[in-house]
Length: 379
Ligand SMILES: Cc1ncc(COP(=O)(O)O)c(C=O)c1O
Image (cartoon, rainbow, N blue to C red; front, side):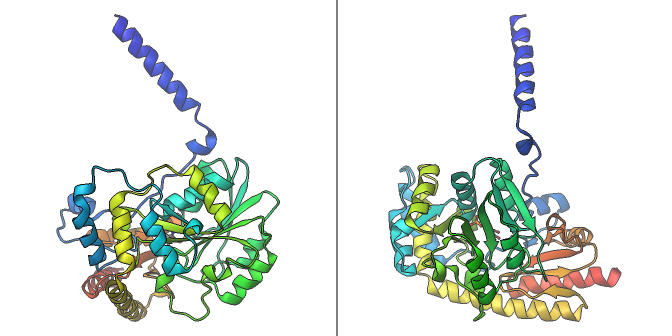
């Protein structure tokens, strides 16, 4: 009898803790990732499904990264280097910055969260585009902050409106360049005018997860502005160009004082050892980088042409994905799924008529276009 009384007490207590959870946690809407291939194959029984939903590298990981991990597998019983010494030195040399200006994270996702946890207090504001990477508002809300969202203009960050949305409570401005999900970039002149209006007291986070794909002379690489007297923190990732999304590794570049504060907040071993070995090797893998950019260039050209031939509108993209207007985005996403093609519906970004597709290998791109053509014919 004792037992049942105890368990009743326990269940009452656990109700209690749930009830006490703060409103800003209770109302969080969980991030919905791209559907994994295994899930689609299980649900629909379709073998050989393809995933063009999470902007991953269609060529796979850098071969040099795979070798680096293989060589060191017998060291997996050891904790990783909490300071990422070798990787930071490799990055520092490549980027022309000091290792103390670098922080490495469990994906750039973790760095977004670290920036918020380090620089925002409950009630503080962060300004961001309404249709930018959805993780920004999520982590701000999770920290008890307030996300102030500014609509895009022509699918692009409206830097003027973003500057105008800043208040004395603003701590961080998040910018994604290129932006996800639109693939658009803001230009150098707009960025420089924006910076002129921004006080050095505001942390400007520039998320450059896709910067390597950009081939446009008007693109402002944010690293070139770190000495401008503004407080700029640049985030990049090994998940896209280097094909290491499964390992979870990204890096941030900023002033030493900014990085030093974030280092205090992160977990001691936030970046696993294989990720560090792989990332360092991938940095040197010029061949993989060159092939990846070429496959992306060709794939983007093919997709753009085919989308136009289908009579659909698309948003011109500077990254490794492209957003297009298909009518009912969720319906088209579902109809592609049953043909074994996974893309991303855009309702969560308030583009219910669009889908976003990652540029794949030529074979994958053709399969996507064929599947889409069938749907458009029916519709
Ligand atoms: C704009 C942007 N920032 C950051 C990330 C997160 O990348 P990571 O895998 O490094 O966490 C993504 C991933 O899709 C992204 O699109």
